[in-house]
Length: 491
Image (cartoon, rainbow, N blue to C red; front, side, top):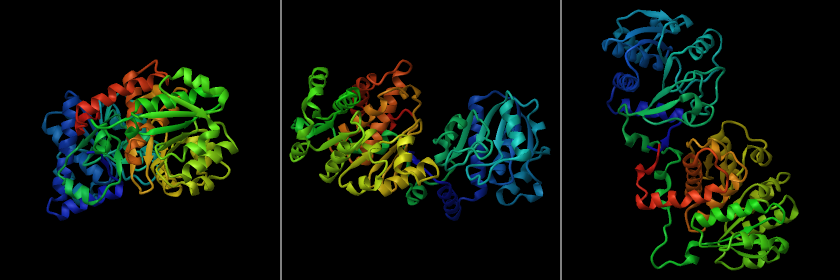
């Protein structure tokens, strides 16, 4: 289930499921059972405090408390507000609870070995402050393990941002599908282990909502991988033109190696003549040519992809070459200097986009090109893709890939070792290596981000950028031998 639902879509899925004959009471009961199943799988019987808010999330808490108490657990329940103020299914489940209902306060945390957070769910729309903030602090300062229901209270379900304060959970159980805040930082870190539970909402209802945000796993792009055929040759696998710098040559050397490891059939580095021997000696399988031949070489349709930016230098020459490449409507990957060169005139860059184009900014480069955009990471990347006409890779520990048509993939791989010089250059190379083989731009870019993250995750401590291309053959072989089955994702 790689789809990620917005809060509005989740509400609509609930509504349509109830309209189709599955009562809300049953959905709430199923949610409570799912949380209890997660608790029983991870913890031994202990003293539990269930913290309930005034909405349906609190109703889930009454179910959890009842089910745990029936299994002999020592359960205390605290409610924000009065039982008489509850409505709908939450009120129904409050009536089924035969234990004491205490006022929600920090006193409930004293002596608790496990806290079940049912105060606010993913739809929280305001900052937590006052007495509830004190309770959040008490939970975080305690030694109790924490299971959050739907979303840790205080985490915005859409943006992953903290609304005032937020509970730091060990486990988060959500329902039907995950929400963006489960994967966007800092919410991702506050969720702990994430469990997505089936509570009876049909897949057909989810599909009818046409979700366009996805977790970046192989099932998103597996069907679009272009594997070489028996009758193929190197030109079928694409020919990359890589515009290298004269001084900072390492960046494009890393990108070029990554592009070839990703499957590009041929690659030519174009650079200042004085730098060409370095490129040629470093990579025997790479061809070289003077940068002055770039425009002539672009007339050959076999040169079907261009990467510009790593080590290119900032200025008029880079701008001119980027615009020419884009006007030729070839697959283009623009990174680093190719983006910064347009910081003062981004509209010229966007206007020139013709063919499949991928821009790979980090937050600083993004802010220079899209200075007027604010909001959460998904919103900003999506808006930037629409404005530029390009696939946008907004890099970070929670990298977001956004397409002009609104599709978004969020990467969720633990790979802090990728924070090393040259890592971004390698990512750009992987992307162009997949593009020139004929993969669609959104899928190629999402696959490249996944491969890049997996390489960092599997290698672990000690990783340097040079290690990433060397990890690609094993990852690609695993996908190929497995027939890129949906279950090949590690998530």
